[in-house]
Image (tube, rainbow, N blue to C red; front, side, top):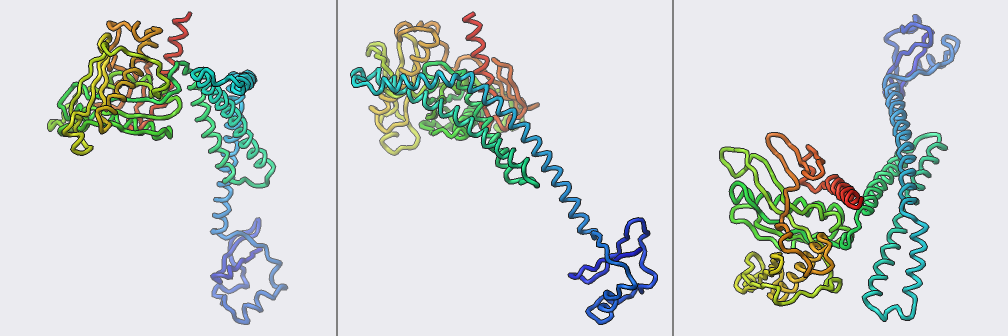
Length: 455
């Protein structure tokens, strides 16, 4: 039996075979049959006695559409099954973190702190009151974060249940749920990292100082320092921290001699404290006409960005050596002609800081002294000294400390941390601020070292 489908849009015949038949035209149907709006067409279609009822089959175009639709459905189902597994795994992970964080204990602690804050004599001791308010804010933030984890998991689980009940899969809903799970896992990663941060200044912002070191020509070394500056600025921007380059001393040919970045954000210092040290690059120098492989070094120093009122530190004047110089760079005649740059050295330890970003000598002196105090507090913590005067000057490392990371651009691509052993060949992403794996590896390394010392 031969049946025929006519596409009215193009008025062209498409011959299709019924089941168990061969594909060939009916013997009574002429090959040159006129498909037009003529009476003969009407007579042909209305002659039911000559042909049995129509059985419509898909044209090649519609068959292709059906195949694509089926294939799309298969991919959508696979995406759904993958999403369901991801939601289940993330839900378990979130519950484990909520349990280990001690949510009930946090709620009890919140109630106690709120009771203290409501006491009529709360502000009698302002220093203690500030400490209590900071602790209250920390506990509230942590409880809110743990609550948000649960809500996001429930949102993703709702999408999965809706999809299971629907006749068809809504790819828009799946995409939304997948984004929720992706962002939630990032948040869980960050929360786990904060659990590794227990230092007294880990919750503060950070000040990063970068200084060009040795190796190759001045242009090459200074260019490497500039690359590090961009790397840390990009990291701060990706974390959505307020990031400012407050001081930059340009090189004569290229790059920078030194730079200072202030990063304001919760736990910025805790995350970046492990970046302190010497950073080494191996590459084909763009400043060498022969294209030889050369090695350069730059130093990175990290200090907590502490508000002045939080630093209850007094340094005797006789322990300080203060010198002034012209700052140079942009800022007008006042900066270039007046000695506004300030360098302060702590004589007992030899620790020094320099500040040039402010327009006046007094402002630079205040900021330099604040940074010196922050640096000395960190050193005191490292040496477990209760006071600044207990710091052992002979044990203070050079500003850069040890070599911590190698960046190899040639003859192969590799970034490797010499302390943790973590490495990656994706050097482009690292230089674009993707430092999270290195930060995470170092914090775990530091935590395990602390536990081993305690044991």
